[in-house]
Length: 497
Image (cartoon, rainbow, N blue to C red; front, top):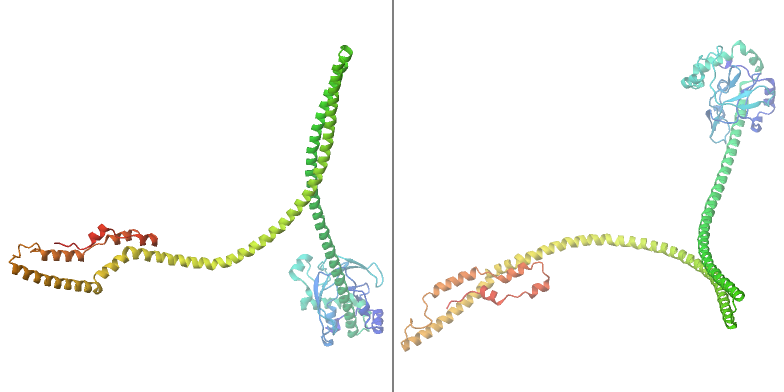
């Protein structure tokens, strides 16, 4: 394939490459185009957005060949020239990976030499022509269906075959005498210039972003300051309106006082007119005139007094205004202090509430547990009073502990009675008294004993019933309940004579 690559480098570029192979490191171009002579050059573009190229650190052995470099040439279709897309590697041992966005740039060939007029245009797909060997279809449809043909080996081969046809003979003659290494070196130098230009553009872009951020923060600061000033202005306007209302009320009071003074002046004027008419029309005595004069003097005194009162009211009003202003400042300071105190109390309240919540939770659990235990104890207490006492008495009545002492008492009582009966029998026998004639003789005593024994076995205790009726009563009330005498007599075993 190397034999099919056209020589697209003129003699001028060749001499510049031989004199200074690293000239591209100080150039200001970034991008590629081809002038009328077929020279492959780099130009600065206004933006990068079409294709992403990755420049990575490689060794010299990984540099692309001339065939790969030729794949980066623009498609020359019609009157417009577009930059093809491919991937290149820059042989700079210290270069870090750089992400480059290249936008297709339309070049105007109206400017001669290296200073070409640069005009950026939106990315457009190549338009197929009859002689290009590419499919003849709509560019947008072609781009959406095929994308970049530089990824298709067959398309690349057809492209290179087209470049070696007779219509490229002029380019071939211009590139004769240029080696593959020289062309690759020129390409690397130009691409390095493009990378450096991209870094400069990125730096300027970041600087613009920082400037915009600073302006944004400054604008936010002024907006916030303006909002605070507006709020303060509204507050002052509210205060001024309140003071104006108070001043209007004070002016109304002054107007009332002035009206009263005018009324008095009117009365005085009428009196003076009356005095004048009486002086002209009537012949009054000097006493009456003096009396009228004294009245007029009194009225003048009253008017003066009212004027003095009005002045005193004005002074009092100004004094009150000053006092109200001082009181207002004091109240504002007090309100501010109260607000701070309320906030402090709220914080303390929140802290105490949190502590109480932390203490209340385990106490709630303990209370619930105590409620359960209390319910259980209440049930046990109710059973003990209603059933337990009866159960204890029943067990005690049939227990060996009670029956044995009672049996012992009965035995000793029988022995005592038998002993006393023997003595009485011997006594009555000596005296000749018949047994039936004594008051102690009773043939039914055995039946009475059996009946009393049965009553004792089935005896009821009303005292226990009374205690059972007070199962929910306090302990003091239970202690105060005593068996009555009638209950004691009914609960005891009847004794038959």
